[in-house]
Length: 194
Image 1: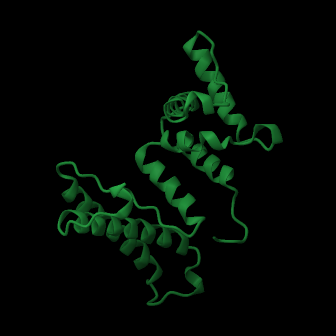
Image 2: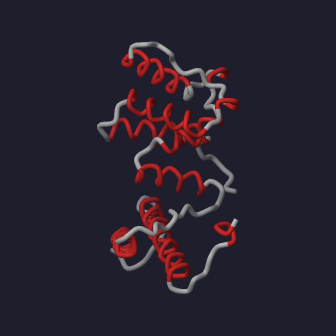
Image 3: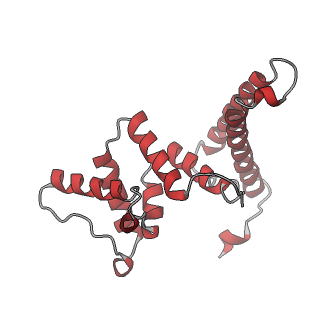
């Protein structure tokens, strides 16, 4: 696990949440509704402690749920992010943004997040396309660092973007390796046998 000054997990979640609201057309009301829907799907009724709005007016209910979600990111000790809502919060993100969040959370534990391969028609070609795309983006980011023929301390400002692109390329390659092992060689992971 990495040590040093890095944001807390709720701060990471909030950063991704704020970027989602700022960079997309998704409103806090819509996102809160998604979190609530996922929460009610994923958390058994007997394990639920979050009291969502029961207001009969859908707009008021959405607004109140959005306010509740927003309170989770305040520094108030009584409004901390509820662990039971973590999975619902993450799965409420659109797929690409969800994966970026999962990558950052995994990296905090010195792990690499890799999406599960899908066995649908065309997935092999899509996976190959993703490998090419991610590798190309990593090469572009690295080429910026190599403009003077080497990587040194002057490239520190470019390093985070290059490392992020490398992580995404690695994830795409690992997914492809697992697809080949499973589909061409018949290897099955221990976890998937259970």
